[in-house]
Length: 258
Image 1: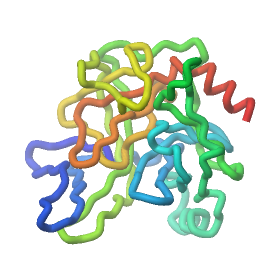
Image 2: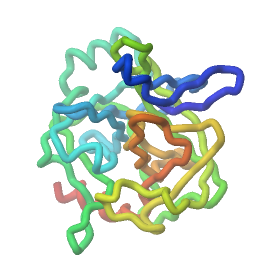
Image 3: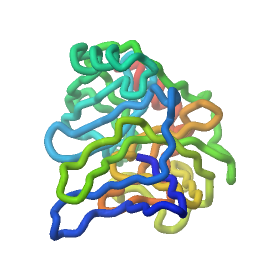
Image 4: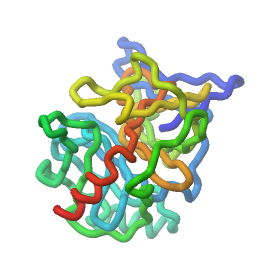
């Protein structure tokens, strides 16, 4: 979940004490997305406790970070769709198109000519879905400039001490500002990255937490980035994002070939 802290409230974005054994992922001060970001999808590992997000590009394809997949995953679509509660329950629980289990063979990670993986993945769904999507910028796009504002959103886990963690009922949104990347602002060392593939953002009080990794970064209502932070024990205030402009041709070619 995206966290925007308010000084007059107590906000905790960390793991709870070892004595209780419970996972604490409490977000305070977040703002509901309302009817925005209806393209947002949730990605959960079938085995293990990996929680991520992604963006629906069209009726058959989802884009996310590579570290969110590379194993069998469950993709949930339409979590923030602007429909009645009863209709949402119907298609989320009865129409299996909106909750699909995706095998590794349908997950496509970008690799360099040397075979090194980059932290960007396209997921081909088993079945077409009718749900709102997000458009990509032009093939010859350039990343947002320094200090420009981008929009982020996500779902995180919240639990009281001693209780099972649960996701909030509404997608949370916020905005943050493009900043220079620091020396430590890098994705997982497993994946290739340099100043041409990643960008960073920061705004006081805005953080990404467990479950937000892989979610989309909007700029001018288009998808310009993917959140690469993969926080577990604590939230992250400095965002590291993949620059989608670097991969625009690869995205089109991969969807066309597969």
